[in-house]
Image (cartoon, rainbow, N blue to C red):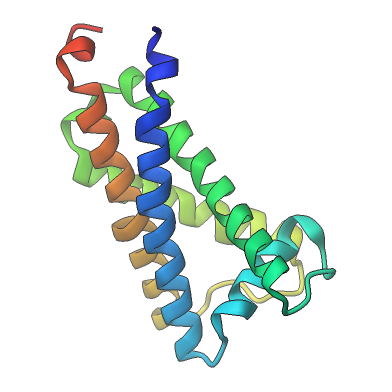
Length: 159
């Protein structure tokens, strides 16, 4: 069995851990601004589906699936890059923080402006800090630690 097939387990694990932490963070910070979890999930679903999503359980499920689908791509990208860039495996905390910043830049400065051009960019210290906390601490570091653990296993130590 090739290493690509073996990567399924750490990708699923990273997706579940980082995706859950990120979603809980979104619920917390959005909730502090008065936005309930259903609205958060509807917003996520509106990314690929436009303004169609309504405040129903079905659209909340779609938003959850979209969120975890995006997270799976983020985890898979890191898992594929890690063995090609040894520093990612040697320094998972620093690499995870850097990956979190990269993800934040892509999501908030590329994806959101292209999808929602009228939505203001991050502009307050509080908003930027909670976004970076979520992306770096709750997403980047767990992904990097899981990748380091996976790629350091004896079967891959000489690869």
